[in-house]
Length: 292
Ligand SMILES: O=c1[nH]c(=O)c2[nH]c(=O)[nH]c2[nH]1
Image (cartoon, rainbow, N blue to C red; front, side, top):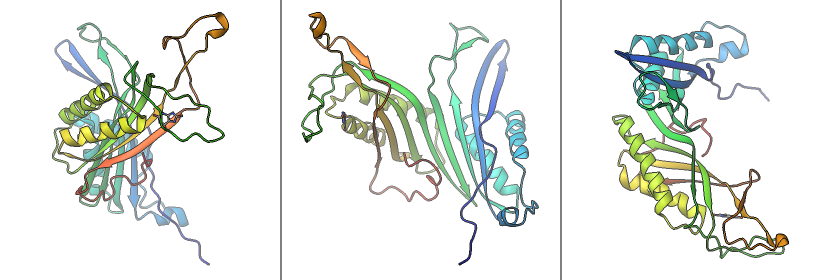
């Protein structure tokens, strides 16, 4: 038996980067969390501690901040591609890079020049993977919380000795969407694509009469693929944020679908991938990302 080194990568996780761009007195901010990870000929450091081929994670961090100054950050996908290609292109031992970026949303306060509020916890995300001269982009959104107060049913499921759930023709449907979509290529208007994908997902959540969260999940992915040819695959993770009808009968009150207990946990967790059957091979696009 021999013990060998398996897959490995290293980098600086969660660099917090905020930039201010000034157009006269009008400021625009970008608030990012950037993680870098490098792969390649890294067995020496693991086996003997020889760091000749190790670009320090501290240097990776500095590169993130220096790049933010040297050219406009732009869209997160472009910034991630730029960083990943730099590391692979300048370090002989480094053959691959994975750059993860979350963009935190800030809204301008009432047209104010330089004051902002953080309205929600929603994040725009990207995961860019570079392998040699190839690049894959998986972008997405996280913590997109949505709720509809009707237009959702759940019934027809098996009743076994442990089933207590009541069937319903009218319930609250709420979830916090994590969506990731894999682009077929890299020649994409990233900002437009993001805005339209987000909007198609929201519209489908709202419009689709739901018989299960699974059906809603599929419909949202299908709508994205129908609307956006640049997308090859959509992966969705949607916790069912249960709203249980409160039993008010002890107080002689009827509850006509008006008073709910918003449960925190446990929650149903509905996850899936929707893709074109002729989608280009995913290559390294999903490597080391969560399955959904
Ligand atoms: O949309 C739903 N899907 C389920 O699989 C499920 N299971 C459950 O208890 N409630 C629900 N709702």
